[in-house]
Image (tube, rainbow, N blue to C red; front, side, top):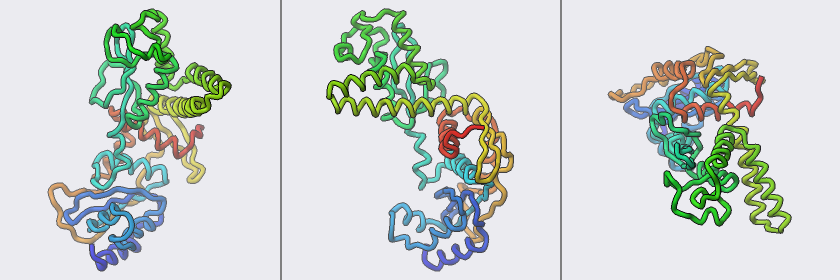
Length: 338
């Protein structure tokens, strides 16, 4: 995009785009979607792209500015609605220049296998887990592995993949496993460990926290400061994890109500679907510049309508979508329930 084109688009933005929260989309010369973003001030944010040199600054911004030939926008009633609408649009259309909001593709899960001595495994997303006992999603394999490691160390639930633990491993000797392969724990006692594991993964970390705190204090008293620091971090991780899981469970299975002090609007979510407010988009528009439409052109009116319907409609079957929605709402309200 040359400087004349940028000036023309900037003039359109000043004339048509409101100083209000909302979502914007950038399209290429063939009307194909390139990028979706949100802002508390649409005009200011969209205008900023057309007032900078594409050959200075970050490379992905330069690539975006160079490809843009047209734009569209949706004004929303609040910043939260802009966040939610942006998330739905990105997941529905996967713009090539969006990366952060597509991180759900990196999500992982923890599975308790259906064995006499269940194993806790990190697994990837599958379209349908069926009757398998799977928890998550977790943000990536590293965090899922961290939670797995904490439970392995504190409760002794095994992580080896043999359906019947027979090959003796060193984890028992290292104090990281209850040792069913050594016949150090029977089925009844191991089932209790699995129950505590399940409680933790559902947001009840009390037992795990107590055991971690005891180990942390012993390490500190024994002047094993590196180990104490690691356990201190694990305690904090468990506390944050428990708070997040409790919120996510309520958000996806029950009803949550919030009152936003900025716009004095009550937000109601039932099983992850937004019940109130019903009005999400209060105005919309697009650049008047002609574009050479192609069969895969992006149609803002249709996309916006479908995105709003997705927010109000039945919760999606993909757990990752609801998990991201829960994170957006929890982060915005910081746990302030009505």
